[in-house]
Length: 429
Image (cartoon, rainbow, N blue to C red):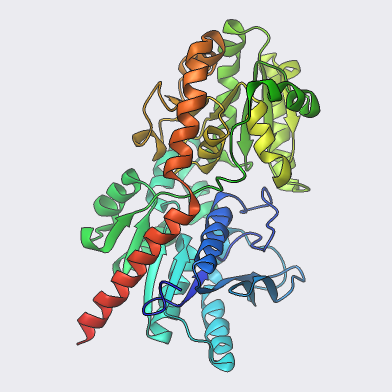
């Protein structure tokens, strides 16, 4: 076990959504962050560390999901038994801190470090780390300042504050970033925002990109694609978009760009794998998108897929002619990395961190989803020019798999934990 003289046991905290050993991705507040936390935790456990992923217990969930001998999901009850939106976690975090610290001390658990995710867990994690007198490392995933700035034009200010409580979130984010021992940002643009708008010291931050499961997400031979396309009812010029039903994902902007795509590639379609299984909120959002498609006269050019099971996810990526991520803002964009790793030509938003890592025309393409003509034309390019599609397929997969495997990401983070512990030890001398 290579880290026995340093970090042995990690308390990871991710509070919102449905966190489990086998998460139901697409359920409310359950997406890329949950994947990030669980995949990292699995790699930590493979490296010989004990990991507790602590989350909220509600809706009759069991207290524990045992993943392996070194890893479990531990649910702590607070805030009642009903689902609580991440925007409404403010009112319940104090109870979580109290309940978790009581449970840790009752069971005599010992941890070397607290590693928290998103502002809600960061606020709790700082209190817990102080209570246990251990180091606290935090990954923001998204920033309240950035989200508020990018949603301001689409919503009344008073309504936005009532719904998202940005003022309180930003204040708590600031305190978390000031008080924790270290911040791990996922992109360089996110790091720049932390320096500029949250006054973070540069020596207290390291950029480590997210990872992806290179065993699950991989390309297949072109001659195998036809069978997969028949199996999933995907046509040769289908464009895939996939993710949670959320305003920032920009699906309405994508619909506005489709007439340009269809003009350039008349037999193209959009495969919209949006939302989670059984979510009433998602159903309402998708119904609104359907009405928009009707108004645009493109409803017969869209194949709606409400939920893609995890075992089918890589094949959906592989069979599409193009994958598009049209987000208004996207701290990173793991779905784009997964699509690229599967060999699918990918168009990403310019409003996010991934744009600074890829080579335009080599690894992927990018466009501003606020400009429909631009986004529509960029989606069409790989279908109009097969040589470009082949280039993006091969080089995109090489780029994604080389740079974003989870084991390498976990080792980088463990090195940070060890350095943080050593710095904390020196500060106490």
